[in-house]
Image (cartoon, rainbow, N blue to C red; front, side, top):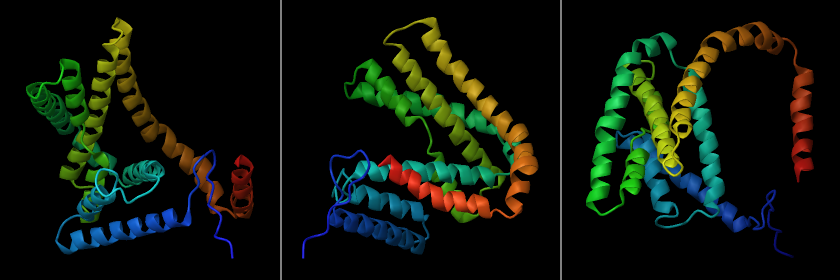
Length: 250
């Protein structure tokens, strides 16, 4: 009996083998068990999951094959996690935490983390631009980690948690602006320095205004009334056409 043929992903020159799929499943099982052990030790499950990923990932054991594909799944999961946390966020509590979140984000990213990382990088002999890049990379706060921990503790909509989540969002924006400014140093010009700042501010307020004033009426008046009605046509399209679309892309 011939061995099973490898699974060929779309646009991939290297096939997936069943051994690699088994290692992926073993990795997922190990991450789940690590999360349970962390909970048993009165720690967030994220602590065990991150430690397991660091031990079995490319830096150490390198147990997981095709880790780039797994990283893509992680990025998609992070996006869905942020969307879910946004759906569960109390906007009123978030607004009340706004001024404190701005102060914490500016102090934590610009006044503390950036100078400390910059000083340490210069102390070990890094050039000034590389030192600035290190400081900018370390200034953001992981909003995904904060959301996971607060959701597990069921305190996501408390004022303290909203301050931390809002400051983490602002930290990410500040970090992206700092990295954009460093990139602008290669070809300095007024537009190269001002465009990242203006675009970040416009994106923040534009998306925020759309989420508060445009999306709710669209959902309540257009989408939700259609979803509550019999939707066998929509289900037929989703379950019948999507596999054929995926097959056509192959």
